[in-house]
Length: 319
Length: 298
Image (cartoon, rainbow over all chains, first blue to last red; front, top):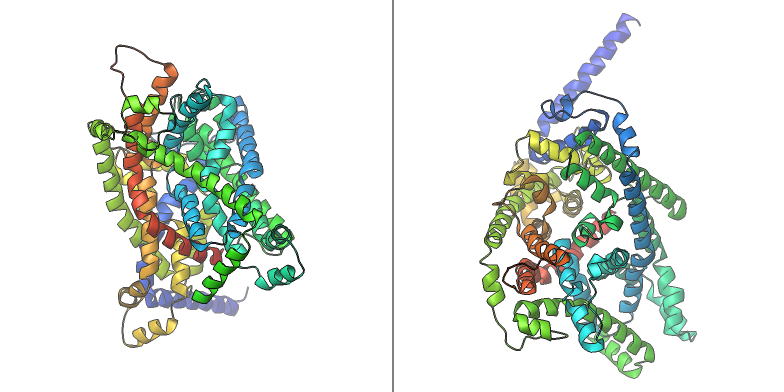
């Protein structure tokens, strides 16, 4: 490298930094504005992300999150040797596959049907009723369900009073747990999820309907051949997005609806992480290994979903 | 608008088909499935034990009483719950709003060194997060566990709300900012005198978002606090309901005085749910707007 080009390079660097310095000075107020928010992200979002490196360490409380010694992959060996971990992955996939099958289509159906209500006011009232539960926490919704489905709850006293049926403890029977998860999920969030589909329906060209009406089609035919295809792209986007969350989600719901009697069928990956981290004998490195596994799987699922979407609709989910 | 409405009405009167009947019946059944549990919970909270156990479908108590509420408020946890949640709300929401607003305005125009990097670093947290385990250890190391600040600081900026607010701010005319700057205003003056007044609707929306989130928050408090004198209302409700589930599942029948647990439980549900019910009309109006802005971006 000749001396002159070296000088030029140095000047380039200096110039770059001088410009950068000027830029920073010029926008110093903007930096001041974003400083508190960025500090929050750095401390409470990025430190935990880098803290996942604990998965490769042996946690020693005295040495802390970043001072503990590295031990390689042995935490992962322990994780994959734990049958409860493998079981929790299976349970998560099972519950979320069920959600895709039973819960996912319901808001689509609801939006199609709501769209056919031609009276303005009843439609608004119905929509309010359907969206309200979305704003309640799962603690509240689960408490309501405990009251409705309990031994002395509404369902049992009604069935007993009208049909003389014996009381059933619905929330205490493992085989009822998944159906209750799907039904309460629909109960809480179908109305809210339907809003997105309603918006998509509102965007369909009305000329199509007029033309079809002139052709003498029935309303059911129009729902099937115009409305449904009209929101197909929205359905596909949301379906793929839901597939990106196959390994996560639903912690609040499952945590609040499950109890010792049903935990066997209710321990999802998130529930498992909670149990091993905050109940009983605690090994934070082990927990971190599970958490890192979970985050990586979620990221892979999301990127796969993005790839699939690019292929299907030409534009991805991300950016 | 009014003529269109009139036309729709006529249209409807002309052809009320079988399909309309089926659809309406279906929707009414669905609405009943949502409303009846609420009415039953409200009715039970005002009923006596005798009436609750004798009525097959309790919707309106014949002899309403506030006994259950009276007994509920004798439970010291309810008072603790209200206090803790009020603390979290009053300290947390202003911090949420301040962080989100200043960040959204500061990054509205990605035109200064590092802005792009910061923006994508923020978006990345939507795809990848550390989860509760390292966050808990961080809180321990900062000495914040058992302090209300752990709950307040764990939820600072919601990235989705940040995007919604920033998207709104990008729609404000840039010429206003330019002319203010020519008049010698600095960034802070521009923000407080021009941007914030123009962003009132979106700030109100995000304020509601955060207030509801804070009201409904329980998980961080359960993990970080673990103190008997610092329990948010949601967790108090959970305790009251879970107590009875455990009592029922073990069918403990000792020398205890038979208590009307359903009455207290439902009263607890009502006092936890009431604020959300009261702000629901606003929520519905504003949340829809928020979703639309968010949807445009996504």
